[in-house]
Image: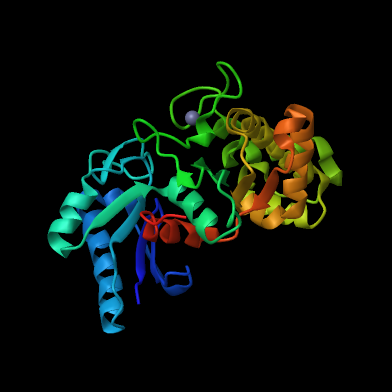
Length: 317
Ligand SMILES: [Zn+2]
């Protein structure tokens, strides 16, 4: 039997594992990435993870067709090389992952952008299984995305497709982590969700369930407050959902997808209320014809989507 091996390099953790051809997970491991150690140490760790997976597969007499890696940043998927834009891993731009690992491991190594591969995983085995025209997004500090059209992951002319978080929604607006201005991420990312929640909690005063320091407010606390029925937290989340919907309209009008998948902590905790908020906003913002049959779905694979998508990146649907 074949086993698919994937490694998802993140700013905090390296998640890696093996799956059978049906996407069932055989191994699921994680280690801290210590992203500030520089590229050589990280490459050594990626190699070590790959060796662990190959060893397990060999032991079970399973054949691994290639090692799949997902990395932040713009990835030249033909060369398996990082081109740029990976602020969470200093010095990572320019790293030739495939060339180095293939030499040492003697197996084909494919590399893709992490958010693109998470999207691919959700289409292969997750929330968007069965759909062929999909936008998948993940909301955290940053907002990642991936687009699948006609059953194929869209990489783009210079490997930069799917940067959903950096669609501008306000001309010359707030400064974004990427250096540009007015990006969706600057409005719907964690930092601004916290800023919006602070404002709402302040306005609610004694009525708010949160009486701690506004400086200490985190996304986790906001989601906790939401679960307790705090209306200030709800209002901030509703605003964030409307910003997301604003970004979705661009994609809906351009590509007319069948499904939009939303992942990350907010969608995870708020669930159906969150997708409903997005749907309601879309009803006001988008063409009725473009919304016909459009599904807004909660991501299903959670933090395993990265390594699963990496593992199956050269497979087809
Ligand atoms: Zn940006």
